[in-house]
Image 1: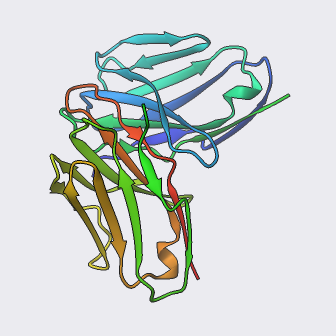
Image 2: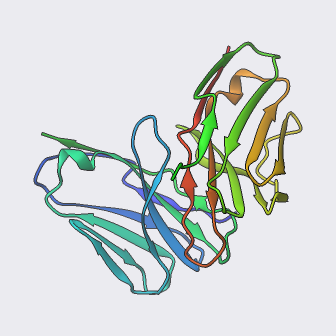
Image 3: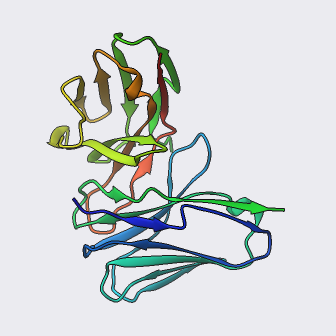
Length: 111
Length: 114
């Protein structure tokens, strides 16, 4: 069973601070996705990375895929209260087969 | 364009009762997924379909769970009989095939079995 470990599990910081959350696995993925989930809603895709070493930016969010395609990180610059939510990483092995999700990082940005 | 639609949004039932959850995927999507989310186990894939055919049901916890997709625009997940440990949020998602595809999730059904 391929597992995705996310860390930290919970993170609470002040608005304006920077943060990084991690997603690690012993398996190599063909693609890795990051989703954000808000209370009472389903996860929403933020980004997909497919190439080892790839870096993608989405406004204040920077996503990196490890060179070996086994790990990924999400860095948020100058966090805002609207960034609060559950951040999930999900690994895929090609095609459109079901993803394996990590348990997520619960992020709270305090005003 | 409507997203993935799930019904009901909330379901409260008593142990032993049959529960049916419903999902309408995004039109044109050829994959449909059922997930279950709990605090303890996170988001778990239960089963997925491609062109209405079940491809992998290895995540279905036991025989009390069954899923069908009679056509491209409708799927059901049934639990019979339900047990308190089935309490969770159940999500349906749909996608188009291909590398780096996006899964679009519905709002979920929060199931409580008393």
